[in-house]
Every structure is written in structure tokens, then in C-alpha cells.
Length: 98
Picture (cartoon, rainbow, N blue to C red):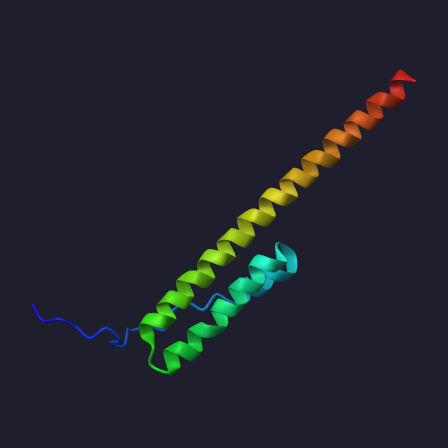
């Protein structure tokens, strides 16, 4: 079996996750979105410079942070809505006792 070079050019450019990272930054979770943007910005530059392994790694990292930001933001939004509903219902029931 012939061993392939480490930086052999892959057939497709890896997904850079830039749009998703920007949307996560704006709408869900600012810190995790910024980490995603930083990694997403490295994908194309590493690929164009010939660092295909680095581009794949940056793509995986950007995707990971986008997913963390999305699900973290989703959890925070759900908890916030539940807290408002519980406190709102609790405040309404306290008025009926007076």
C-alpha cells in the first residue's frame, strides 16, 4: 500500500462556517460566535496557502463552536422563557391571594 502525502490536495475546499458563525454571534451567543468566526476565517487562507490539513482542522473547529453557540443559545432562550412564564404565573397567582 502506497502512503499518501500529509498535505495532499483534497477534492473540495472545506466548509468555512463563516455565515453561520456570524449569525450565531448576532443572535445567540457572542463569545462562542467570535471563536467560530476566528476559526472560520482561517479555513480559506490555510487552504489557499496549501495547508489542507490545517484548513480541515479549522473547519472542524469552526463547526464545533457554531454548534456549541447554537445549542447554548437555545438552552438560554428556553430557560429564559420558562423563567418568565414561571415568574409571570407566580406573580399573577400572588395577586389573587391579596
